[in-house]
Image 1 (cartoon, rainbow, N blue to C red):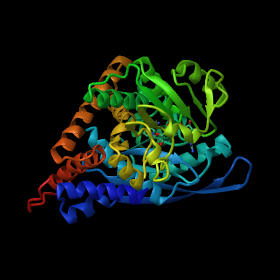
Image 2: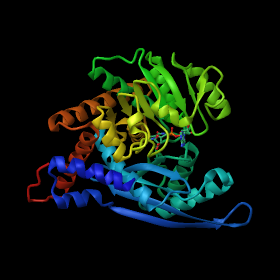
Image 3: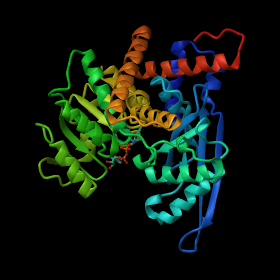
Image 4: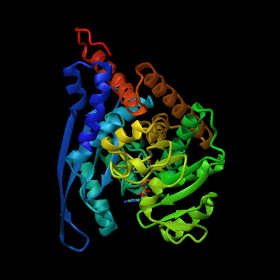
Length: 414
Ligand code: NAD
């Protein structure tokens, strides 16, 4: 994944004719942390894990990015994802930099008491390098509002009441209205924006969605409320399809109960991977990375792909799809709704003021449409695709901030 994001970076940097020194500065993480977390578990056995936090760039504001509790978490993963966060926050224009981190564990197999202890130990190790104006973590894979509440509590023991140290907190503990739905709604706004450009409306458009978790569910609900037909949905365990459109509310209900779309009666059963090549206008990969590859890219039937997941398209697949004329809204724009409402949460915490849901939704919609228009303008100016344009916009904004703050006298054009 790191290699792919570097490739996209250089493609955009070439377009901007970016100074080689500045490329190096912008690609290198500012700080990489690796900490040992060892303690006696609830059953008396010693538990040992490694925690990571990569602070990639903070030229435009405090570091921002999720914490992932997953056995595959390592320095390379954290670095690649931190890198993407830097461009993502810049593309949507929220005043943050980029970071990512986590712990190499599987919390699903752990005693919740041990997950709590481990999280607090992690905060103990990071307490001087995170903070509302330094680095603001958020939930990611296998971390949720409870983990954020523990982080806020532990951090506040050292620094006083600090709700703004993390986002994605529960609503009753200074979380924001609309945070849970934000990424999926943001994806839906971009589908609307991309269709509008071709004079189309979501009404009657056929959509296929891979992944029916937080992001996939809210993207499906928002798009079907706008009249789109959700024709295929898949998750880790199975897939379902209905050419006339699935009953999304019923499917959400089913999934809440059974933890998978598999077995949903009012649909035809399909292989999970068949969702990617389903007969549809819009494809939304909203599950995991590297699912669109050189093996299946030629079979994708959608004409618009909106990357809700991080890095779902390999560079090889990207090339094939672009040659075929498929429009791709890249991850650093497509799934930025989450970090946008995280910014609203942080702003509310700093101001000690609460926004209502209507305001959050309206500001999110404005932000996503503005970001789309700005990336589009960059794509037109340089006659390039949306991914390269989004990277170029992010690099330009971070690069300009870096150059101004460094008081470099030699002119670097950006
Ligand atoms: P989630 O855990 O709630 O849901 C993930 C879904 O993907 C589940 O339905 C799961 O069954 C499915 N899935 C997992 N492996 C699969 C496989 N091999 N094939 C098909 N389906 C598979 O996660 P989420 O929060 O909805 O996040 C989805 C993606 O969006 C991730 O890539 C995440 O990094 C990205 N993302 C999420 C947010 C957010 O705010 N939640 C923000 C930005 C990016």
